[in-house]
Length: 313
Image (tube, rainbow, N blue to C red; front, top):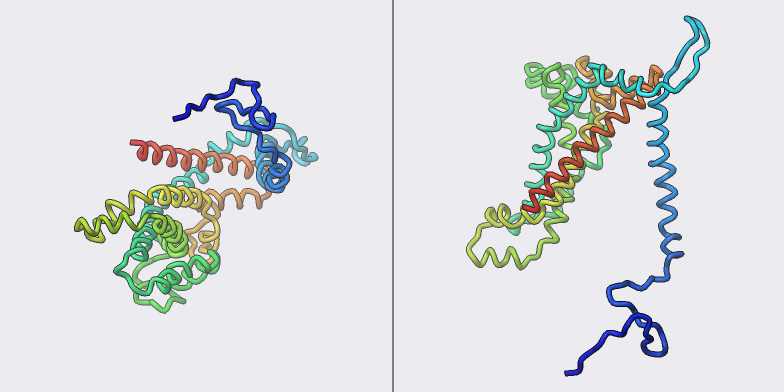
């Protein structure tokens, strides 16, 4: 056996080229090409993401002052004045609590249905998978506003074809309207989350399930003990998307204002931001937006860290 000795630093290899230092990666020499391909993303990221966020933060630090009752208005730096109004606004925090209750119930139901449908599509016992896959996904192709209008008509006692139900169950009343909206959101987004989980299931090696079948495991046992643990990262991803979407709920309740007086202009945090900016009070609306963005970041990042710790264990 021939021993191979590493050349000392500075020594030359074949054809007189410097020998690479062990443990160091040679420069790729494609810096300009990398910059060329990354630059469009960087420009768009700065123009449509970073700069608007910075502008919103700056706007939230401003306030409007008037000289006397009828004096000219001028915008001045107000520091945390707008944030003091945010934290003392009961309507805003009531809307935050409402969507948190909404998310605690709706997100697990939606993801549970998405996981169930994905497992059924991945099961060898189910026939007509192409049809069911399309049927589950079709509601997501319907815009949220159109879906809310359609379901609003179905809920309305005067317009619904199911008058026996809507006349006796006040789906648009103050107690049930939030769950009526939850049904719309679930109907629209189950198929989207199902496709994400189903794509992860397709990446599970078939040999694993085949070995479990040879050991006598049922399809239910395989799904519970093999498939679900292997697609937990995909489930966590859909949960994070759902948390963000819950705190950004706007289109569906905004449409439901036409059907139910129980849905006010401050029903959700985003509706509060929209109503405040329409006054117009853009500085307070910007402060609402910053606080809402921070809350979304904390909840989604906290959920991500929690799932990572459980996965590490």
